[in-house]
Structures are given as structure tokens and as C-alpha cells.
Length: 105
Image (cartoon, rainbow, N blue to C red; front, side):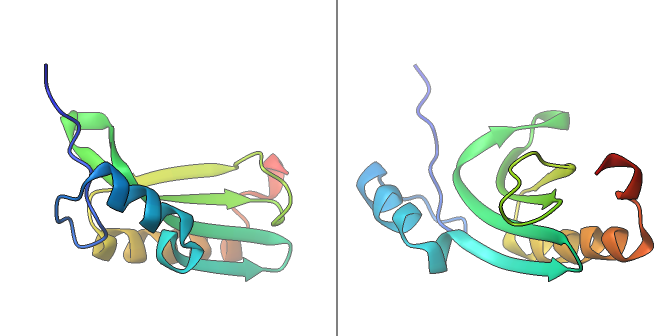
């Protein structure tokens, strides 16, 4: 049986107990958050791999919401590294500024 590789934000392997402690820490879990007009863009560390296209393990995720209290995502993109996640976060913020999600809200 394969073991799930839990990783911290720097992609170091960590134990389940370490993961639980880090995941409870909002300052650690939330990589970056942006409020643009009525849209909320949030990038978080997942810690537990999510397998996506091409079989890669994704440890970060950016989601776009209509507002911070609306939990129906307008967009969701996952990333392998924190660096990729920060670049992706800015791309989704730019999508918000360009009005990409106007017809979805």
C-alpha cells in the first residue's frame, strides 16, 4: 500500500501530526488572499497531494469567489509549488480585473 506524501509549503515531507498543526494555523495555510471589488481570490496550501492532470501532485490551490462569504467557487486552479501558486494567484486576480467572471456571478 502506498503512503500519502504530506508536504509542507517548502515541499519537505512531514508527519500527519505536523500537518494537523500547520493546517490549523491560518497564517501558514493561507498563502495569499486578495479582495478585488466584490471578488475574493484565495491561495492556500493543501499539504495533502491532489492528483491532477498529467499525474502531478498539487499542494496549493487558488480559488475565486464572488465575495469572501460565498463558498461557490467561480474558478479553481492547483499548483505543485508555492512559487507557481503565487504566479497563478496573480493571473486569477488579473482575470477578475478583466471581468472574466462577470457572467458567472
